[in-house]
Amino acid sequence: MKLAYLLEDTSISSITATAVAQADALIARGHRVRIVTEGSPLTWRSSRAEWIYVDHFQEYNAGEDDFVIGRNGISIPIETGRIVDDEFFRARIPPEHQPLRVLLAGTSQSESKGIDDGYGAAAHARWFHQKFDLIRVAAFAPSREEPLDAVQEFHVALDRSEMTRLMHSCDVLIAPHHRDEQFALTTAEALASGVAIVMTSIPLHLSFDEKRDYALFAPEENAIELGEKLIELLSDAEVRQSVRQRGREIAQQWRADRVAERIEKFFQEHRMSL
Image (cartoon, rainbow, N blue to C red; front, side, top):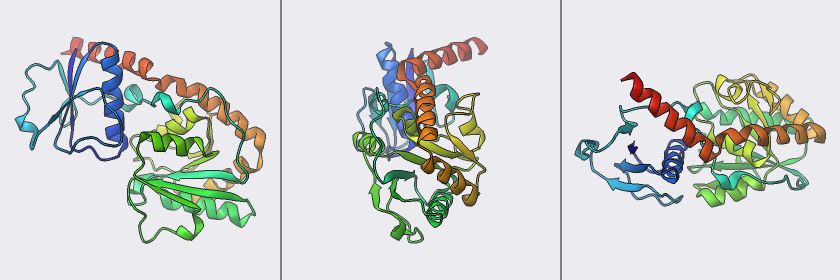
């Protein structure tokens, strides 16, 4: 197939990461993939796609393409196309850190990430004498409202390799997303990395697997309940080990080759329906 992805920009985001990962996976299976963007050259990850830079998408002639993805073209469902880069997957889970390293990922400027709830959960756990290092990572610098005195490390705009190293340096992830969150790519990367997770019980998180034993769940927009689940995870090594193992198992569905097969089937079905 001949495919073209239309990307408005190339800044660090789950949307861009997913599109580029899909392109690479499809190229590995013999398809021609172009990425057309109004943005600047990609710098924070590698790409095997043919890149075309335009001032406006109207400049691009899609006459040679079988399918155009994005910007009013075809939209690949996230459950079909979510990809976790191979580098995140680990063959074994290394020993935990002391104190445990707890990661809270996402920009506080995006309400769907639920970062305030993540901070609240961490504060609740510390109130009940839990000892851990809180690690923050975001695409942008922290907002003035963030309680940075609660954070031991803050990382900004990491490339793929840097993000992998950071993820592998952590033991627990707080995933406090709200139900309007569309991707939760970092959550999937944490599962593949064997990181234990406390996450909100939004449909996106619950869709990962029918058997909900790959994380501890709390209602969205409820920092206290999220904090209670964080305490449970931090205080019980057996629970952490169990969810870590299950997370690695279900993350196999997001391997690039498996996702590419699903995307091919999606396009075949879409073509038949035309």
